[in-house]
Image 1 (cartoon, rainbow, N blue to C red):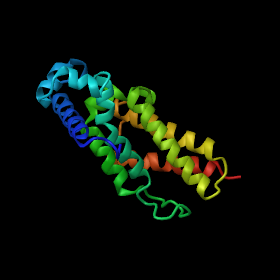
Image 2 (image 1 turned 180 degrees about the vertical axis):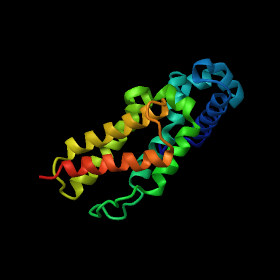
Image 3 (image 1 turned 90 degrees about the vertical axis):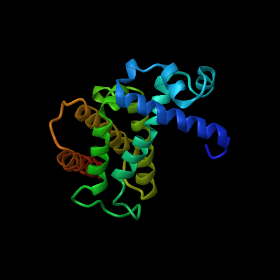
Image 4 (image 1 turned 60 degrees about the vertical axis):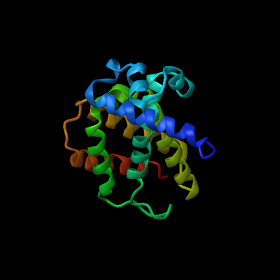
Length: 189
């Protein structure tokens, strides 16, 4: 997106902000393209120039959560060969708290089990990063472990957001971290 026209970037940013503002008042299913476009000060044609539908806009608006999740899981890592700490990075609990605050929107896009458009994006980015890091240090089974880590994180996050896993953000960060460490360890010969 670095080559994106500045006007396009501003319009898309305004549409993302306005969608999040609309979703603060009501669920995504009750939000209309007209309401978002009106709030953003653009026409419906401009909306459709940039996004196929509200779901595409919502996933784009939530892209920050994907980056935040990936960064939170790797916040401890200053060197690809460094061993992970026994305790979760503080950024993980912070990420989970922020995700809970946007729960209604995320639950619309991240279905139970980790399905849905946000789940697909989160899984894909987590898997790519985990695989690249494992491959860079010669860790065994980069595809297997990266897939397991991405699926576990995405699924557990979705289940927690849908209130199927009772835990505070800090409790979940601790439990999830231990699961992810076990998965990384299971890939060793």
